[in-house]
Length: 238
Image (tube, rainbow, N blue to C red):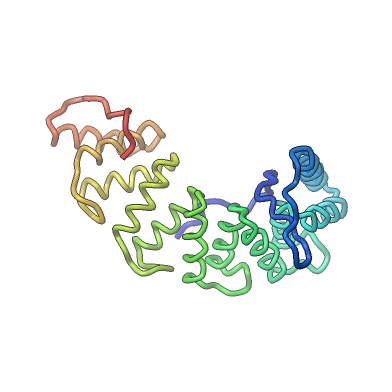
């Protein structure tokens, strides 16, 4: 599988599961969330301007305060060798903790680490489990990756209906590549019932998204349907 995205810094201070020793911490107030978000943005700015020690200290404090994005960012600093004693093992630990707090960017990131082997060992089955988790949390990239795993039988048992399900979900989320693939699956009846109208729907979506091959497929489908240049339906989403 080709990497769909590199691991980037996160600004979203989402999934506010505060850490507490042996007890459930209270949900932050809106004002507290706003203050934590501002601190996170300041820390990312420090990083981008080369103040790595300040960024590290801020991310560590925010991670202790329960901001998963901060732990994720620390993991990225480890992977980029921006910290003394940087460690891929520590990066995986930090990213896994952020993922366990519900931060979907980290969930996808853990999957990428296992797929690439940057966590210290390459494990496609473990990557597949984390991609599925990211997909279920709404990550479009995760949906494409687990769909591909099911389609190829690589990192998950081959399951064409499951592949079609996740390609369709990613297509609904606007992924142009997934729109083209689910269209081709409807066209050929692979993993789904053969349906040229749904194939046309998704080829049209891919064409609007800039896919270079989709317009030719649209003309081909139109010829087979005998519909000429009829517009694709826009009122429903298969």
